[in-house]
Length: 613
Image 1 (tube, rainbow, N blue to C red):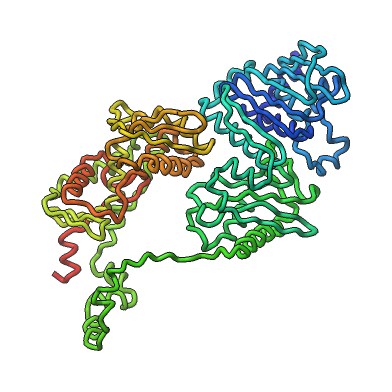
Image 2: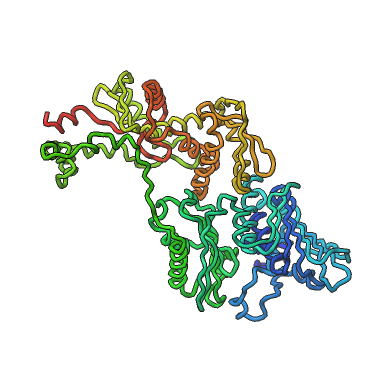
């Protein structure tokens, strides 16, 4: 029998190796930008077409390469930094030429122009399938221009796994921001399909943060700066009022390399303890300088995850530095009460609390409810109401792989619908409690409906119908609003435009990360369109880290949550009646898309038992 183990051809081995480094266009962008910075450039231009699928080009004014270096840079295992194994643990640069170029040349058609200051002419290379197909002298400015075309042209299976252009562009923007944030002393620009998306002039770190994240941070950044013999930390955190519901604006850099670290993020969140809501995330761009021998950057192919030799010291240092910065700028938790002047006129405030009134108050059942120990347990055991929980605590959440309903959910929904139909609800005499709950009488008791949860369920099912072929009517604006977004939000909104159109929003790109809102759904208040879209984007990003949700599902849930009538809003009789009727016409009336109850059921016979009847 013939031998079966064979050596792979170089081009196949290179393609396999490339899969570790170049997973999508953004991976190549990261490597090429880092190479440009390491070459000493102070001007770096990134040009992409077709979200990087047809072209990724990086032009820098760095030191350039000799003819020999230009050829060697595309060989496997070629490097300018490592001559012995110890060097692997002393790397302070980002990545110089050779490490990624072999991978890029294995999966794209590459054109390279490079020239050193001391050379009269530069060198031009064309490489395809890891093979140099052209090499010749060329007139070129000092520096390097590298263009990779038709990414994965020779690996169609991998190309098929790429996402839509807007989705891939978002990844590219993320990588661009991470490198540009780390080097504010370098000019960076990003052009996509001939349009300049970023133009970042050289400046300070604060200026770069504002350039990237928006002017709203200009007066809301707190400087962090601590230096010790072991490590240094510097950068900025946002004041507590800038905290958002999403993690978006959070950047950690170690030795100028962007990293992801849940451990360090936890340290920072602890520093903000009690200053922001538990479900909010502060903005930060923090840089840690540490001896490279104290960390291992090679635990992950993208080098975004690292290991510290002494994690506890780093954790404590980050937490302490941020706390110190916040204290130094006198940022402490405050409570802001807007006191209604009319409250001062109420009898309870203006008149003395006499002994007679005190005696009357303490003898009431309401007082005993609040003061008697274990009262809640007493009520539950006496009235045998434990099974109430079974009704409104769903066993399984909604099927979140797509907007259709799961078998379990349909079953529970049908049971709830059957129960509701069986009980014959009356919408004649509806009562609103605390501007948040609606009491709906039935022939067997009553439902207590949570108005926001109920409206969320109604909107969600309307949106499902809309994207499945029954578009929501658009109300055109007499005075179209202009919406100006950050680059990342503009890219995201572009991706959502087709689905938003089905949902009643008519938005048109207006250039330079600006959109014109020509129309919106009829139930969005005039003049409120901009806020509605901005809050929808923020809510959408809140779901973005959850891979279980599809893009469309995230959008539907975000809009339902955003547009639902909030607790605290007073409703007219007609509004309550329409809400209740729409709720019980839903396929799953008893829970929100996220599994919260829309109403609780109170049966008359159970109420009688509570009162000893």
